[in-house]
Length: 206
View 1: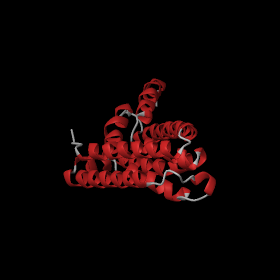
View 2: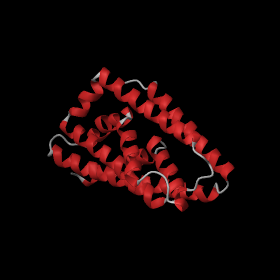
View 3: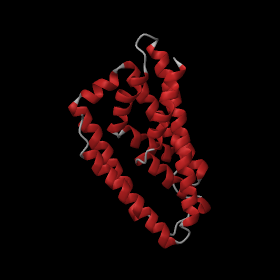
View 4: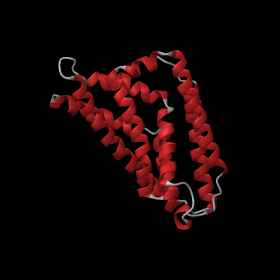
């Protein structure tokens, strides 16, 4: 793979990784509630989902999934429904509970499962791996190796984005120290997640 390709790919890719979205919002919320390390570990679920998608894109199956109207609709409805469920959980969460100090709450595996399901239920992620990554693949060179390199770089940058949003979440935890402010934060996140769910429902294939 040519160096110039990576030079062009990295900034464009990192811009996608840093774009505010359901998974990044979830990482921020998890960090506020469970701490920086737990939120970063939970992000492994998202990376596993993206690894699966990158593998599908390399094999050409992702294009088939994206081209299928029925499969696209199923993924879209599932993703939107899961976003609405997460939004409901945040909206009704007790603002006085402090999970970090009490040791209560979901396990890292449970949080990672949330990240995984949220990523797999986002049809826009399929579009990224079927329309974005292939633009940087040179057909005259080994395609599998190029997808491996680009995928590895994407996952590394995604991990940095997870850490960045998690750090912001920790900052917000200190900022929203009172129960009233924590309720405001939870409900704000719930509103954004619900909005993202509505956005998924109206998403159309281009």
